[in-house]
Length: 360
Image (cartoon, rainbow, N blue to C red):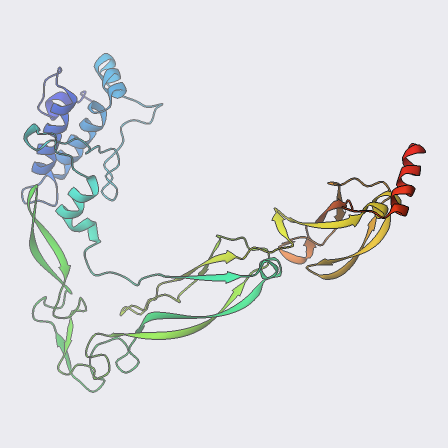
């Protein structure tokens, strides 16, 4: 197969600057784009392929040296109509004037965003729930209210009275879409949009629904019971399928709930473990003791070993964060803080002095 001459395809010479390459590509992309009258899909892909190589200095150097470009056997990046991968529109000049274009702005405006400006589907909704630290560890159930678009129950989303007659929309001839011409910075292009007479359904009714006035959807308040799983972290998101806005197609969007865990004065989290502090007296630290401690599971007795140092940790197994189910959990790590008295009686000072003299 003959080698493609990318310079010839872009109608430039081999000494062309990057600005010349961009300018020529912009002109040819406009000329050959398949969504344009007189466009040529094969030519457009060819121009795109040439631009991807010559606009990259390393790829261009390899092409100039070997007459081809192959990235680890991957070949050329093909045309991606959904994302325009490989295109670099920054710095495109209007008549070489240095005016910058945004890729999304250019092609979103040219071709309606490849469907983004046609009739939209169901919308997803978002909500926030704040829960306590303890609720985040063990899980909980929260009731929330959301405001959403809901299908009209009277017309079932048709927009017409149940007793009314329906007919094919004359404007779009039942297609639900109408063609038009879009004026853009790169010229005029054919585009399709949802028919405004039938709202994209292709059907009209002789009587509009008296409840929604033909709009098919109503604003409604809905109360939901949300299950918060055990062990959830602040910032995590819960997806509730089908609880977003309704759509006239009968499909509903989803509800996304962002979780915020309130700070706790006694407990913090470290992965699967829970951290807390326990103050002990100097005597208990020296001699050892048993002290009651409030945990998330209730009161627990902690054994303080003799000679423990301030800052040491005591591990209480299976009192941390659940892992999948409550029977398997992390640990509770108790940081011991030895409390030094700020003032002593004469007798206490005497005893401590004697202990000091004894080498303790």
